[in-house]
Image (cartoon, rainbow, N blue to C red; front, side, top):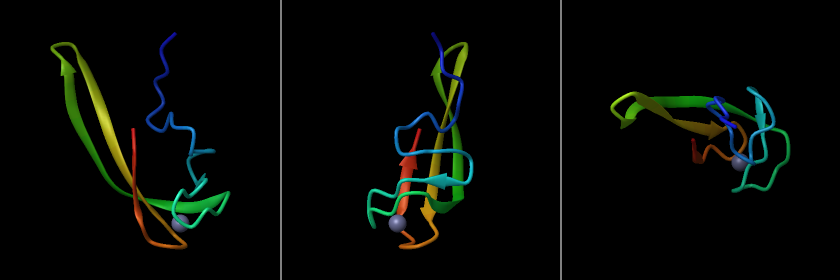
Length: 63
Ligand SMILES: [Zn+2]
């Protein structure tokens, strides 16, 4: 089964909140700072997403 979500990471609750691994805050809000597309293979693209915690302002890589 394929998961097409850009934020299919155990830290992410939904498109607005995540469990911050740095300040250990659950349900922290975050801002997406970058989203980079890359090729997984010839017919499949992936997307790397970087989010900033709105509380501690550390950047987390989210697949
Ligand atoms: Zn944080």
